[in-house]
Length: 473
Image (tube, rainbow, N blue to C red):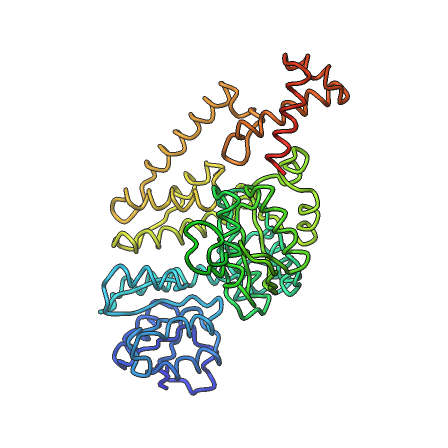
């Protein structure tokens, strides 16, 4: 291991930069740039093992990692370094200019990506971003000296509301009971689910499933699997995602969309850890952790008969709610910078320069689509950028368009329409059942009086109630 700041080894904890590269010249030059720009001292390591040792021993603001290390010939050092780095930003350095390599590294959790030969301007930009990130993290809760656990390191925030959420997640993560995550669309429910899995200490896989738009038979087959010959076309055994998540976590997103038949099976599985693959005579058992998420009001779904009350009360024993982005505006500048860097990387553009005017324009929107909507807006603005600055005109046009649409909806009464399920209208059968139940409520459950309110016969209302109840059981 080489220490390029001229200090002895026991001064490594004072260094701000770790450079892991088998080329000593790269380490020397990077150390020089770091000192000249005021970023601080640098530690250089010429192998993965030396780099990991330095990372465990020191506290750095930034790590530069070369993917072509001699003791990691397959370029597989990234995940190993990320696991040790925790919330320390790690930048990948490589001569591979393919976009696919950059995308893979960013998905794994890299802070950024830089090509060889290293550009002084690019390095200075990285140092600036790392310094600002470190400053913002130090402002999270200085009076308590609050530190962000590695499980939350990929969630970019300085909001006290989010840190209250993190504490709640820490408390419930070790429990074997199911967890219900609620929050608006685009607020980051899967990121919180992954944090729960990581903090739970479970060694099995994290298996995500989106339940939206999948009918009862398909989702049962997907979750619980089937026996050979269970139905036409079932030519071999399917184990199902519950089996794949054994010893780990099964994450069911959009849980408010599943039908009554699947709700019954899910309740049995949560209560007893027991399930039947389609076509099986004997139950299977699993100890996987269940984490569920929805953007729907499940209590209202229970009241309207669309969600089982016994399942609902089972799920709310452990529940957390993600605050919408409009309630944590202090996160917007951090997220804008993060998404702008990602967009520039994807589009092969120079690192963007974010000024106060751009942030002010972004803050003029309340983001009903939350972090996902903000990401899309920033990507669009970077794509329309000129002179390395994201387009303010693009942002203003986007916000104006959405304000106009909202005004049109309010004028037409669409925003007050009650028969919605999340972003979708209720199905006709569910709507008919709700209408009949409202008529019965107004008539004190007198079917004759309810039929008169609806303009149909008593026999018709009785028959339709029976048909609809059988269909929704």
